[in-house]
Length: 396
Image 1 (spheres, rainbow, N blue to C red):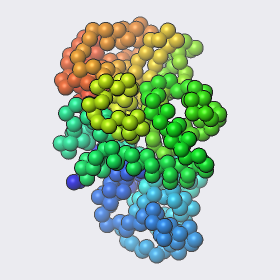
Image 2 (image 1 turned 180 degrees about the vertical axis):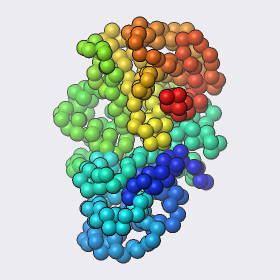
Image 3 (image 1 turned 120 degrees about the vertical axis):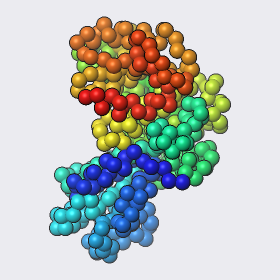
Image 4 (image 1 turned 45 degrees about the horizontal axis):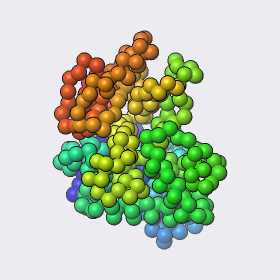
């Protein structure tokens, strides 16, 4: 099954204007498939192959000369041979062909460092997360309830190959810990790192408290911060930072912790099926993580830098997500309930009193199936939340 990715048009446009394009994102998020479908005449080279990788590292110049092609080359998982980027720079400067090199990478930190040193100004960077609500909806693969999709996650293999989520994510975590983590940082106790990963899953949607996390895992805070950075660099988690413009010292300034994909988080929490989510203590946090991750996808899929925050003051007043654009902000509340209560809108009134000079577009996303009209905010079902960013950015 072929699932069309929303990033396709941005990828084609980037290849039209830049000599090289890098598609970054989590392992197995669909980067290779997207590159091959978009550029079917490019020569494909996988650096996951140990023999290929060895040749690339031993003699990069000869390696690139071994693959002559008039259309271009797709280099898959460039983090395995980042030194190739220096030689790619020489080729793109000589050939002057836009879109000749299409590069994919699963480790943000390694690839970004290599790119900034070699291909700055010559390369476009795009990010591909797992499938979005909108992509699943257009492919007629969207689940009936939000609990089903939170459990099933959004990795393409679960849908395109109809693989059981519990098998996909358990194997993903094992492979990630045993292989990717070792490449990013030499961690001797992989069991302890996996314990750390599980503790992070139990803190989804919470303010990140590094000292508490470190203490519960039995490591020092510096190690905990390093491991958080590893999880971010390999697209397992992301941190949502607070919005504190014009608020001074009255607001929380630590980030919140979320997972890029809730299928992975459910696996780490030993959730065996979507029915268990109805009673699970992490249900609200997982739903919030799913929606905010999808908002990130919506930005990335149209090649825009995400402009997302949360807001909380020291009295406990909070807005789950703030979408900031040039001319307005959109405070977004996310509710796991299937019915709307009048009490859900009280934070918007509090926000309005604080932000009298800033135009706001209030939105409430809930777990029900129908959009509703309320005076206090635009109410969206989780299914229609997949087009929020396009709708809001189109009005500017």
